[in-house]
Structure formats: C-alpha cells, structure tokens
Picture 1 (cartoon, rainbow, N blue to C red):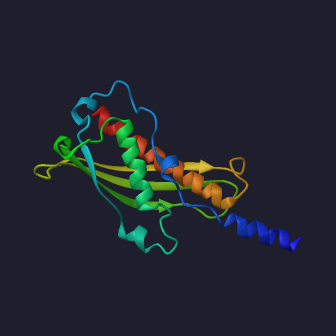
Picture 2: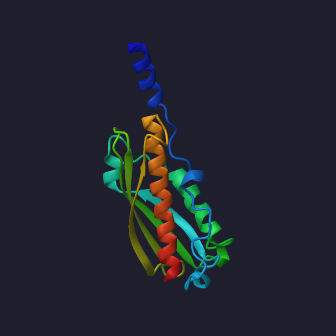
Picture 3: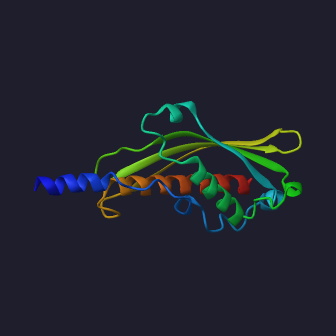
Length: 173
C-alpha cells in the first residue's frame, strides 16, 4: 500500500507546464465591437515580463513567458488585431504578469492571475490604454485525479480568461 502512495505522489508531481494552445483564445471575442476597426491588423506584441514579486517567488509563476507569448500572439491573430508587417503596426503592446497564485493541495484548485496590459502608439510611445485584469479559474477532482494536472489546467484556464477579458475591453472601447 505504501508503494502505491509513493507512485501516486511521484506521478502527480510530473505535470507539464501550461501550454500555449490551452491558454489562447481561439474564438472571436465579440461581434459588435466598436473599436475593432481601429485596431484591425495594427498591434505588435513588444514585450512580456513578470513582476519582481512573481520572479522572486521560489515556486515560480507557473507561466512560461514564451508559452504565454505564443498564446497571446495566437489570440491577437484570431481577433484580427495582429499587424502582419512592420508598416501596419500602429500600436505596440507591453504585458506584465503581475501576480499568479494557485494552491498546491486540495480536491479543487483555483488559480488567480493578474496581468497588466499597456497599449502604446508605435510612433511616439504615447500610452493609449492601460488595463489591469484579474481572473480566476477552478478545476476539480472530476477534471483530473492528478493534483498537478488540476493545477496546470486551472492556470491555463485563468490565463485564457484573462486574455479574453483584455481583448473584450479593448475592442468594446
């Protein structure tokens, strides 16, 4: 019996990090967006950073910046906002992962994510919009019996909700 628990603990610790495909928004955000025409094919993703508090966290944020970049680029592309060439990019987007919290025990795991988004004009770097978006997502035992998988799934869902909320507030003006 003791051997079974050791195997369960080892398997539950072997979960892959959150993946871009599961964090990306892959459906249109809204159909009646007032500002959609303004940002159509006009945004370049310039930087993604993590706040000092997230970087100093000994457990790490759990969000790989490269995977997050891929998810955000895919989401911007799906929304029709990603500039296709340097000449069409009228705006640059800077993103900072401000806070990531998720418990590592329990039958249900709720991840909390706070991300800051700054949209600037590419010509003069003037700030156009600044958003700070908080989201959360919960996954339970029915989603996965493996704790590490529930934790990863809740984080992926919280990040996807965060990106979706950002695109929604940006496009609705």
